[in-house]
Image (cartoon, rainbow, N blue to C red; front, top):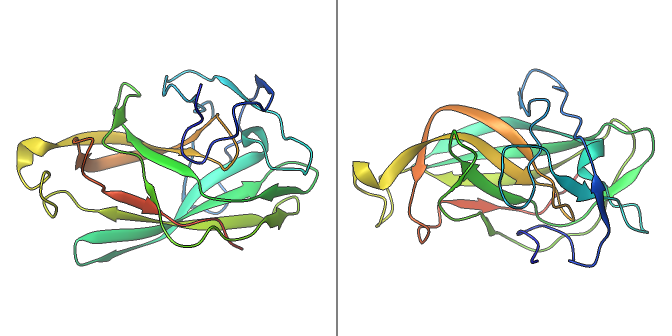
Length: 192
């Protein structure tokens, strides 16, 4: 089994997790019970127990989106992970990000990694790290410039670094390119 973009090495142990997804300040936040496994199924799936080194497992993270800003043909927003646990943990690397339709199936290609790998971010309980997500609007790129080449999407699926269990951010009135070859998403590594 191969891990998703931003997922763990295949040898890491797995066990059940239930992500904590409380809203931390009025921004768009992941809803309770919205973890998904690497397969993209809509039901909670086995996750990752943090290995030695204290990497943050999905079960101890909450996800929200902040600071969305539009530019010519794109939107930039911060994906914010907050440590909801009682002990410090580390976030290191890029998240795996993709769109999902209402049935929980991936739409289009997963986000490309943008920029340098960065360094580990230690999160005390209640502390957060952010990654910037860029979304290219449908109608801009070749292969997604006709109305029938885009489709409504219901959520962003976000795999925290080193995890095979994802969190979701619900979306409304959003369409995305349905082509598996059009790169419409890119994401940076997590920073403070």
